[in-house]
Image (cartoon, rainbow, N blue to C red; front, side, top):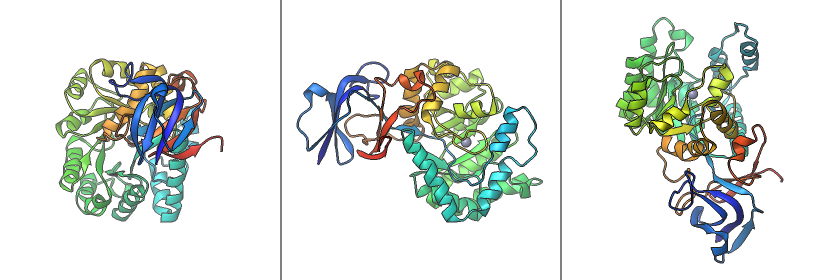
Length: 392
Ligand SMILES: [Zn+2]
């Protein structure tokens, strides 16, 4: 059963041999899907016969966005905290503690419902591959269960027991690190692919973070890290030393950090939603790109500091405030995200890759940044099957 998509005004392939420019764009394009993967890509005039033909009416197509950093498994609401922060007043209630308490109190079914509604939002925003972290349970049982619930919706499930030190360990954080590295790791690792740690001021220091990541690697997980969000600490240095797939946030980087990243296989994942929602200074994406660092853009969807599921929003902010070109931002939200998850089957549309893509009500992909706040996603497809259609 072969299905052709044709009459595509502009197709982003991310395959330099296939089309022009950084995004390997093809005008007046078509592609064929067979068995959920791309079987042919080219000019619409050269399309052969297929079992089914879908005319996209001159719309543009991009590879499905790859969101390499999200925290979907949580309960509770923190809109009051956001409102207070934007009003410049001090917020007295518990911040992340509010989410931890609500998540611990929620049943599996409640959490499943919350996760599913966020996944549906991802599909509506053109995201077809996403990572999701634990980190709001912070007990052995709650971390194991949030890792498991994430693994029900994505193969990219991450154990983030070392998100923050929970209140009950405030006076002996090293005991919590021991718990994360042993009992919690054994309980969570079988359902996870990744281990992550928040290495920053007020969270875990370099030695603690190294201990957590090494314990995860010993348990068969691949490392990634929250690094350099709040200050130019040593998180990026650790990421490169341990060959982490990605160092995430990278808001404050030294010249040495950029040099280390450029010479490594570690992707710098930028999270514009976090700077936006905390009114923080943005990192300079153009500087990273110019230095030869591979960059990903991700939503960081989480209740405290970036409650967005819109990759288009992240792209627009990265272009406006991080000095990316639209092409660089789109590449980072697709190919860059795939690299940050060490995936080669997603993030582009060339023969053999998964047929994951989004159809835009726009003549080309630049419109994603050019028309901020406008929902241009007409439909989203995973393995050649529609998971979202706006006009249905
Ligand atoms: Zn995060």
